[in-house]
Length: 345
Picture 1 (tube, rainbow, N blue to C red):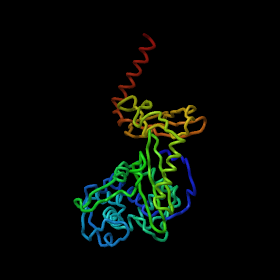
Picture 2 (picture 1 turned 90 degrees about the horizontal axis):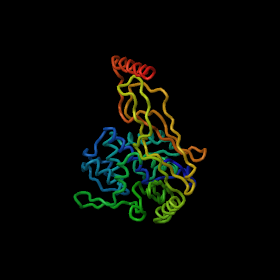
Picture 3 (picture 1 turned 60 degrees about the vertical axis):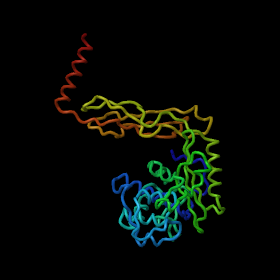
Picture 4 (picture 1 turned 90 degrees about the vertical axis):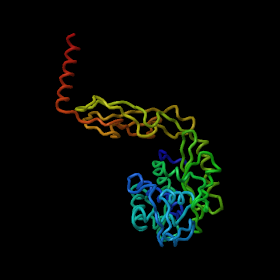
């Protein structure tokens, strides 16, 4: 997702998000797992606080245990408020600390019209966000495959099949290409939905909040997606990980390093207007070892006409250690000999 806005209405109005809040909860959990702070196989124990919550839940008993993965599934699929608290306490020691991390992340992402008071979305004074901010959150969530993996599960059997979870996001059944994110409803927030759909390489994110009609959040989202897929297309220039050039390395164990795109190289563009698009490559002029795999050494910029559409980092495909003094001298002598050979023979 490039962040290009295809349609908007009151994008920065502060609104209660209800259980769409849980998308941030899942993001914080995903980052904790990826950093090694916790593991999906961890055993999570429900506290008195977790078991006392109302609203949508899996009716945790104090002391009841599930793996972290099952707790996250119950949040993503069943919108379980009690599981949110159990997960928050497991990862950060307290629900309050977890919510602080949620707000820190929101600030880091540039979610300027957002403040979280809890991890589950029940009404609370000062708990709000905007459709624009949730779209930012959705873009970030897409960087973590576990989130779409969890939020695309349609149904799940908990407690050895005694408790059935059905995903509250009905677009998973109703709209082709839907593969993630979260619904929400409270009397105050009304019906809310943050979702994502991919068709033919074009991935869109749609956020609707404050819809009064039952199932209206699904209907409005499908209308917006229909508009987006009818008017826009995805133009790919190169897949993620593809070689996009090479740079010369000074004082390295190898003379050059291949550069690859750190993401797929493509843009969302209005249909019929993709013929005037072109790509510019900018490489760092002087690169000295050591070089780390994944180190940014250039950029690939996509233009349509003279308007910049997208920048993709070009990164080193492998580590290039600094050569020994002996190797550097040897390479210098070899280059000198090769130069003389080309001049005199």
